[in-house]
Length: 138
Length: 151
Image 1 (spheres, rainbow over the protein chains, first blue to last red):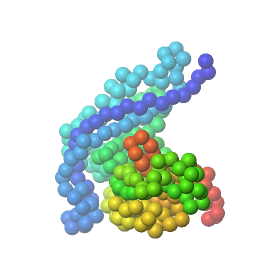
Image 2 (cartoon, rainbow over the protein chains, first blue to last red):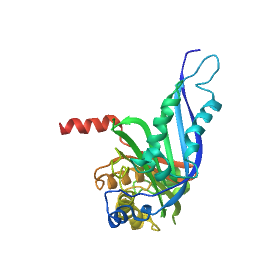
Image 3 (cartoon, rainbow over the protein chains, first blue to last red):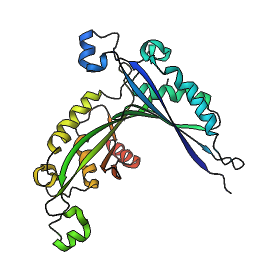
Image 4 (cartoon, chains in turn brown, yellow):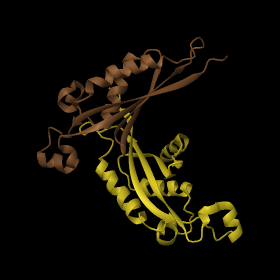
């Protein structure tokens, strides 16, 4: 059978707190721009990771889903029940928005997953707001 | 460092009445083409609207755009004029148009496109019921074409 590509998606959840404040802005400016997001609050985040690769004809798999889930867990779990602004080093230099969270997970997972290509990371902050990064340059 | 291009989706809700019925067709043809959607007295849906914008997140705010700015535009252009209305009978946007899902996604696209600044509109998705949705996005080739025209 001809070699073909397929994608695998996994979903994981974590709960964390954050706030949006730009250090160079006054309290009023932050409140005006970010509204209630400038206050310390939290979310149940949902992350959907999609990888893509060639299906190994011997195993019938792009990669073992169990291994993929283990890797994802190693990356996402350290953020669970944390204050993203203050306890996750990556967010000392940028705000923990769903956009930046998607980029963060994409970057870290890309380094850990060798046998397949990272296709996308989608981070749901709520059911009505999510961000997706597909590794594209602007 | 590469500039990362990110997609942001926001979900909005509106409930409206509509009726699929074209004056170009006879009563019988309307019933044949649109089925129970052409019911004389109308019917309605809880619509779910997904608006996807994209761009490089701002280096300070980490955002593709301020969600509240996007919310304000969608509220003003779509939700306020359409929510709890009869789309075909009461809403100016639908004058001379059929209120099918396909038409609605295109209408939302056209209305939002001209209001958004500094961010690219990427996709409009409309759930008419929990079992059917409609999507509109402009193909990459079309975007390229626009750029070529500018040059």
